[in-house]
Amino acid sequence: MATFKFAHINFNVLDLERSMKFYEEALGLKEVRRIDGEGFKIVFLGDELGSEHQLELTWLRDRKEPYDLGDDEFHLAFKVDDFDAAHKLHEEMGCICFENPDMGIYFCEDPDHYWLEVLPCRNQGKDS
Image (tube, rainbow, N blue to C red; front, top):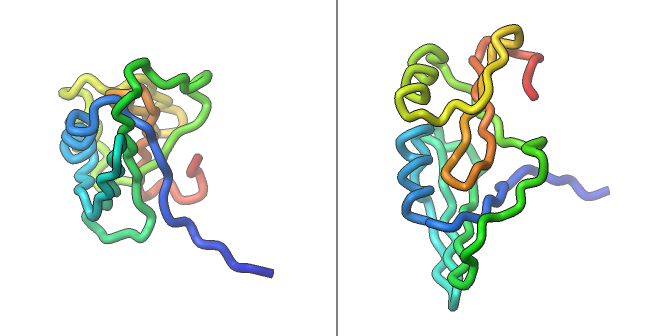
């Protein structure tokens, strides 16, 4: 049987520069590589810790209408070492879209309305 390892997740975006700015400001993600094709751009973002798992942002030149994200039932999760500082930053950015104090987590929404879960590192076993 073959062995699989997570590589990246893709989010399609309408404004690549706006999304890259958001992800750097909100989560400290920075560009690690890029593919510039005819009619598209793909940018891979990585975290400050050098995790192998990356976020792939794909921009399609001809796409003008927002993407249908369904019922906001999927998300990308991030653990953070200073939950209170992260919450304060995201509150100031106005990107918090849902909080669950009982679980000790909250969700942010990126410029294209993808949901991003933020949970403290101490929440071992409660990851979504």
